[in-house]
Structures are given as structure tokens and as C-alpha cells.
Figure 1 (cartoon, rainbow, N blue to C red):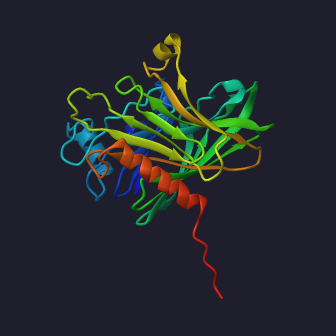
Figure 2 (figure 1 turned 120 degrees about the horizontal axis):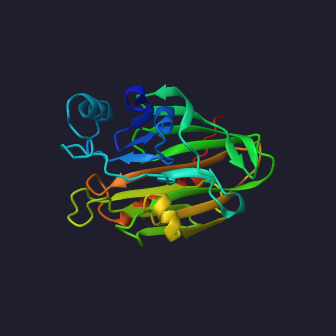
Figure 3 (figure 1 turned 180 degrees about the horizontal axis):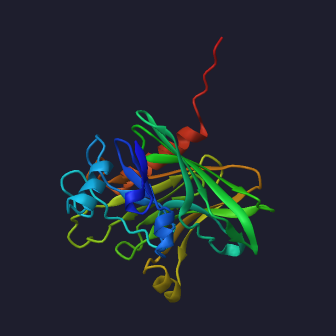
Length: 284
């Protein structure tokens, strides 16, 4: 389930029985706050928690940045791709998408949540008419969101990256396997020293062949401009005008079913194997 939260700067937030997510909206962009990527909220219970967290934070003085027994918001997005956002990559430069412009909820449970997000025009190699549309769906029981991305008015084949931000608490916690079709990162969050928040495991999975995967390291100037993030782990593909770019992204938590990054990477590998070899049903 999920909805748009105009009372919280137009966030659109959603969840299933495993995790919760949000994307930032036009009211936050109007404030000038730069937050380009997906945010991740941990949860450790199967029932919905997002509605109560917003109400507690906005109306009852209960911060959702603290775990009150069912998880919290302890993930740092900042002006990066956050927890698995896709972006055009012309000339090896990320064209960061800002907050969404329009939001339409297409499915709202109990087995699937789906939202359609349309973005303001992007400037791609001097062309300011490129419009991005995303259809994000999350099924019950899944750690990963299926996302279908399209770019209207794009004139030529352009590289597209899917990225996960790397933080200073665990600079080498990323992994990738282009052949197996996934990228991953173990985010120690902002309380890494005492492990209060546990570890958030983040990943993206690709049904099509990945052209390449690598760690992008920010310069010192970029770190200052991008909130002291270290870089991204990126997967690269090509986007053809008029086509759809389909991938899956999401998270797990060390306090809710994943004890180590090896468990998480195994989940991603198996997920990639399933979507690359889907079950075929024939009716005779």
C-alpha cells in the first residue's frame, strides 16, 4: 500500500510486508532541497507502518528516524541516485532526475502497489525536452520493486545507469556481477560504530544483459557538492528511443531476515536467474 503525502512535501511512499520506500515530490523541489534518488525505510514487521510513522513525525512528536520497535528511516539519500535510481548517462555524466512532477497511483494492494511518476523535462546534451516516466510496482513478499522507465523525445541511443550511493561508513561494501545481472551494497547507515541501525542491504537486478558495472568515485569537489557521498556502484546499459528500460531495485535489512551481505547477494543472484528464465505456462 502507499499514497502521496502532500502534508510531507509531496512524498510518495509505499511498502509491502518486507520493506518501505519513498520518492520525493514537487513541494520538496520548490524548497530547493536536492534529493534525486529513492529513499529506503527499514521495517521488521509485516503489517503497514508508513502511515503511522508520518502521523507520528508530523503530529505527535515521534521521530521516524528512531526505531520504535518496527524499523525507521536511517538511510541517507542526498543529491545522489540513492537506493537504485536510473538516470541517463551521456558522455559518462549522470543526468540527475529531480523530484517527480506528477504522480498517479495505479494499484494500491493488497497484492501489489503501483505508481506512475512523470518528471519535469531533463536537459540531455543541450536538448531540454526529454521527459522521463517511471512505473514502479512492488509485490507482496518481494524485496525488489519492478520499474519500467521510458524517456520521451530522446533523439539517439544513450547510455543509462542504475546506481546505488556509496557512503563513508562502508566504502568497500559494494559488489557487482554484470554476467549474473546485479549490483549490491551493504549500507552501514549513520550509526555504523555502535550498530544501532543495523545494515541496510541494497541491490538492483537486470533482466537483460548488463553492458558493464563499476564503482564510480566522486572527486573531492563532487563530495562536497553531493553531501559527502563517496560515489556510486553503477550498472550501465543502452537506452533506445521509444523503448522501455526495465529493472528491479530494493532492499533488505540485517534486523529482518538477512544476516550478512552474502545472504543478500544470493537473493539478488537467484532473483536475476528467475527473471532471466521465467516460468513458461502452456494451456492446451
